[in-house]
Length: 444
Picture 1 (spheres, one colour):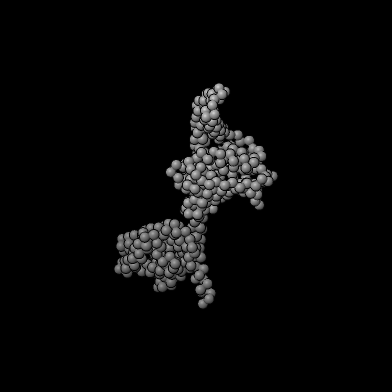
Picture 2 (cartoon, rainbow, N blue to C red; picture 1 turned 135 degrees about the horizontal axis):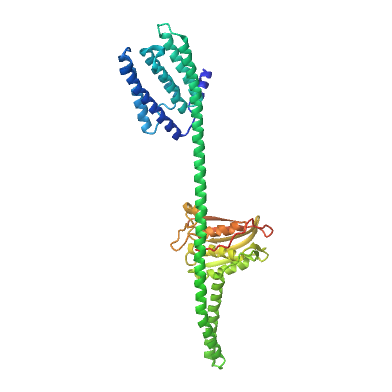
């Protein structure tokens, strides 16, 4: 009994591809319908000496089984999938009866054993096909033994040899077809992966080009505004200086001093705007973290809501310098601060800090804003993904590109309603980044 259970377990169908099972079932169903059609023609029109009634009854039994099998197939299922030997035994019995009632061992229905083996080979494992061959040989042997006439054993032995050969050929063919199907599926999966990868790279390249074009337009606009505003400011400043040299009274001198101060403030703002929008260099060098943060915050204060947020900066004096492109580091900090401003309300708290970590320098920008929805976490750094009405969806994508081009990493921790922290890990001064890339800008 243990050996029998082991044998049955080895013959049980193994987990397979449902697509292959349905494709194989489609072939088996068609073979069965073809065999039934030929059988009815042979019995009723091609064999006048045979007894038509029992043969038609046997064929109708096969018709019923095939109809049930077809119904399961049309619903995407395989009839008696877990009992392959039961199907093989029924087919061997069915074909044996046809041979016995038609003309014995010489009956043309003995060719149906080949169809049975082909159906089994394309659907089940080689072991199951081998056992099916044994059942078919036993069935044909019983037909030969039950025949009362004196038959030559040559036909019997030749038929058995053909059945064994057909078993090997059908199993080998089915194995090759299944292997080819698996290879095609693997190649298809690999091709789809490569297409998705190339599509992603193309989208990122298009996003970077589009953003660079927008930043170039912004730079031209900023330069034009600075030029148009700078000329009148120079004239006003000259007039104020002339009035101050005329020895005005104390009241007028005070007011002129206020005008001079405001003019200086406007000119400083224009210089910062021009500095931010100027064509940046991709020249790498030693960069002060404190200078990077100060320059980014000097521009961010003019952003809507920038003056109504509480921004704190914590940078140790002894913090080592970074090695990289200064303007790109400014863009990273600037964009992270803008995101923090958008995420917080009036009076919101934003902290910018830097410290020496285990892997280099760690820069963090944290806020106490609304946080990030966990459903959006995986798509944060993809191009064109944004939850802002006024956003382009390129900011975090380009931040990641800049940081990775300098050999670092960027990560985010957030909890809805409690705030967000972006962490940028940059390598120490002694580690040079593995690749140089062209300058990229960051947009909101």
